[in-house]
Amino acid sequence: MKMRGGYIALLCGITSLMFSCKDTPSKNHGPIVLGDSSTIVTENDPQRLKDLVIDLQPVIPETKDTTETKPAPDTAAKPKATTPAAAQPTVQAPLPNIAGLKAEFKEVTVLIPGVNAKQAGRANLKNANGAVYTFENGNINGSTLRVTGNITKVSQRYQSVVVLKNELGTLPIESLSTTTSWEALKGSNNQYKITDLDAKSLDFPDVGANAIRSAVAKAAKRHRFSRRKVAEWESSVRRVRAANQKPMYVMLRSVMWKIDGKDANGRIFSKQIRVDMPM
Image: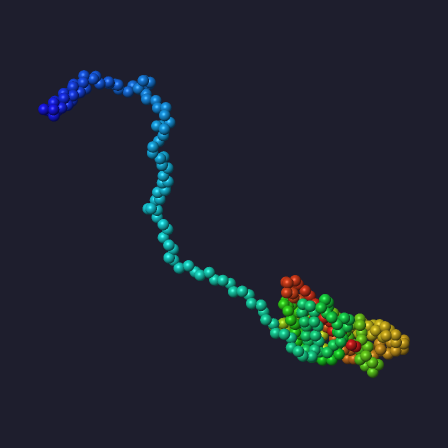
């Protein structure tokens, strides 16, 4: 009986609660009106104003146009680049170790085989531009002038003189002399042939009988001959009509060579050698 009474009391409580909910009027806020401050909810709590979602800043890579056309490889055969061959230095054979006239300058060494001559002045030619020799023996004409170094040109010139030879002796006629101009010698591999120094090839002045007699008399007086002796020399050529007519002879007085070239640094040099013939 007690349990039945408890169930009845619980049922009555639930029923009264339901009726009380139906009688409570519901509050209608109506639509939100723009600019109406009464519809705006203002939150002053900073904890509630925080974003709960982290602000993401993703890095988005730029998209590439994968349809871009690539240039086709050049399959045409290309000529191979040729590397110029390095210039090989010219290997020169050393001068032969034989007797002869040898002039050793700083830039070049000159050798005339088979010619013996006595050098005048200082023997060391390293800083010299020329050298002078007095001929002793040998054969210059037909010999070969040999040089070392980078030679561009070898030139030759000579001086001839007319000499009177007869029973009175030998008299050089200095006023009847000729000096030629420089002429290039032919050669290769730094070897140059010495030519045109024989008696038949030598130049001489083209003079007549009167000029010859006058030149002979002048040469005799220079040698301080007596007046009678001068007259004898002059009389000995009274029938001579040319400077190379006997008893007049054309002889080599001196010969000179000029060697032009470039040294190891490319500087131009010029050396001269002179060989004098004793009268």
